Length: 425
Image 1: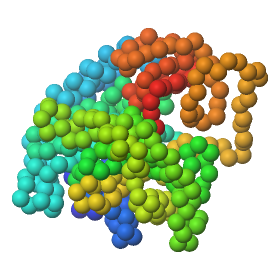
Image 2: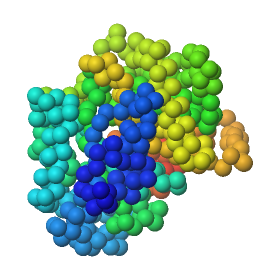
Image 3: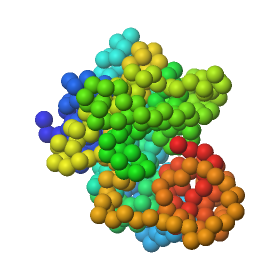
Image 4: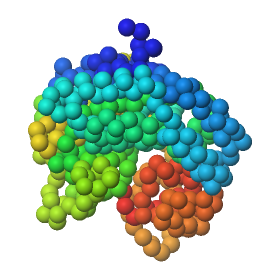
């Protein structure tokens, strides 16, 4: 088959070389599904709606030129202007009619996925994830810029989620990032991953890195986990449990869990069966907060998988490639799965020939204490902003103080003197 002409490619038809067709997220899922399931790594099955389908929609609906006009003369430092233009572009895409032939293919393949997991049901729950075709380039991290929709059921919900994903290629943060990095908005396409949901709403989920994210130390796996669906951990909404495993002796058959830290895990994201949203956050009971979300055996299984994933991608690249991985445990089957993996783009891109240290010249009164991310020093006038919709108030060089951030704050992250948040992992 000519993959370049396909609207739909299943994970078992995709490898990492297909990033231009299905984006970084989907090509990575395909790579793991075809190469690592035989090494014991569990990956939920699914398919990718290709970037060709996205470009086909823009063309058929004739909205490409309108989008181009809306982007002309944009200044990303003018946050109010960015917000307004972004909103109009997303609306254009969300209101577009999906061409009949594309719609038919999406529905047929969704039916196939339903049949593979539960032949009795025609509305199997799926995760619908955006996957930009320039994602995870060596010098740019597009992670978290596009949207993910969880617990999507039935053809109509699926189609709606797909349109929202296509529109999310033009979130304010994504527009701002591409403009500042010099990427052509129309050279980047959006693919969508439709993947069987892991019922982590009844168990736990999280992220893990095959490197220490603070120091860049290569010989450990760092695992974060919390109850419920994974979005809370990914977006830093909860303070998760943290586990550290030493890779070197793990490979020799030992059980080297060298660190465990209990997180507060105050809320968890679960399926919402009554509201008009598909998920909601609920409070975690006090006794569950006092427990770790994973057993020692589960921690070691995940650390082993992180090593397998890292080794595979490093071998393929020809150099050491630390990985940033999302995992989920199914509360019904009790199985653990990897639902995503991408290259780690902070420490792996650092200049290893330099050791830079920041030191305070004089000491003052300590007003607040907290966990630091990295070891730099920042200063500036404090600007308290409680809601992302008010980010236009922010001035360059100020210190942002807020409850928590997510990728929507990207337009001001690059101009802030420092950021202080109340919550987040």
